[in-house]
Amino acid sequence: MGILRGVPALLGTAVGTGLVLFIVGFGLGTTILEHDMVLSALRIVGMGAILWLAWMIATAPVADASKPDNAQALGFVPAFLLQWLNPKAWIVSVSIVGAFMAADGSAFLQAGTLSAVFISAAILGCFPWLASGAALRKLLQNPMAARVFNYALGLSIAASMITII
Image (cartoon, rainbow, N blue to C red; front, top):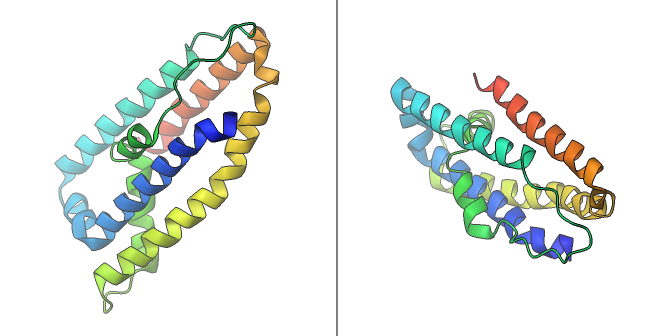
């Protein structure tokens, strides 16, 4: 059940970042990079969203293993929309465009191809992580292990923002 519940979030993240990549490749990336205020605002809002997510994970209540899990999984749309605030999605997209797009080719075709390749690679690359998370479910039924895991994951996510500063 764990893997199936996570698939919409995985797809939302992959497609959301793929669309950010397409938009960056099609020209918005240049506009954002040329305006320091827009880039700073994106960075601040994105960092705020990621830090809020890290806090929510770190302080999430530990589930009672004796009760059924009725928590709603993050769906496609929230995961998709989160990528628009994720500074790493934008930085990765700008990096991919800078590395792989040619100035003399069709921006639409190149951006579409890069986006499709990214979405495919993200799904294939992230699925093992999704499966690993589902496998961890049994271990995390121990309240102490779950609490330590939540703190470690929240701290790791928050620490990843250091690269954005």
